[in-house]
Length: 218
Ligand SMILES: NC(=O)c1ccc[n+]([C@@H]2O[C@H](COP(=O)([O-])OP(=O)(O)OC[C@H]3O[C@@H](n4cnc5c(N)ncnc54)[C@H](OP(=O)(O)O)[C@@H]3O)[C@@H](O)[C@H]2O)c1
Image 1 (spheres, helix red, strand yellow):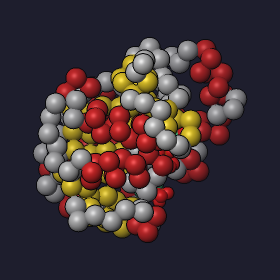
Image 2 (cartoon, rainbow, N blue to C red):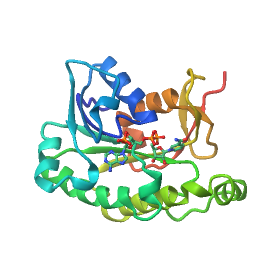
Image 3 (tube, protein in one colour):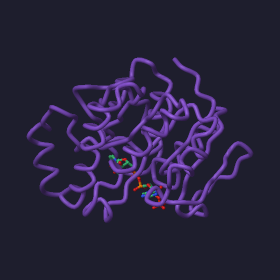
């Protein structure tokens, strides 16, 4: 395990990010967050620093300031409407990784989805069917997540990145502890995915993986 006292969070106002931010603060991390609408973040804490802004509009100087003193970055970001026309996350990660190199920030956690295929792999047939039917409005988001993974794999192996290909069903109480899994993706709750993301961030064995997560059997 690696200790990462200071975190920078993108997507802190989102369904996973709100839980992640609260859990990180409860675990003793200090958290800086970039948020388009800071008032959406229903958390106040002495160790939480919320900076107003959008990933679309952050220049390198602002990004360097956000990364100052930060040990690791967590991204739980999505904007389905924007991602249907543009690979917003990929563009941002391509800007973020060089900034992480400049600041010496070593670790990046990126939350993608279980319907996003890892580089060089094909989704199993049932998941391909779901993606092209009931989940077809999210195709832009999955294609963006896939482009992020390809970029990290091809051009950013010097960074300690890890991708969580999450399968989230709904918000709600914890259903148990998620564990990393190559073969199966459980339908988790946002709070369980956030707790998993936080554990995985410090887990050295998760570096350069893009696994799913599965509830531990009782
Ligand atoms: N939701 C699911 O069921 C599900 C399932 C599996 C995987 N995932 C993956 O998990 C990730 C996060 O999903 P989620 O459902 O937790 O997120 P979400 O509730 O949709 O929230 C997305 C977050 O990203 C932020 N964001 C989007 N564009 C931004 C920009 N340009 N600048 C700054 N912040 C921006 C949003 O800020 P605002 O509050 O300002 O909008 C929000 O905080 C996505 O990659 C998604 O593919 C989601």
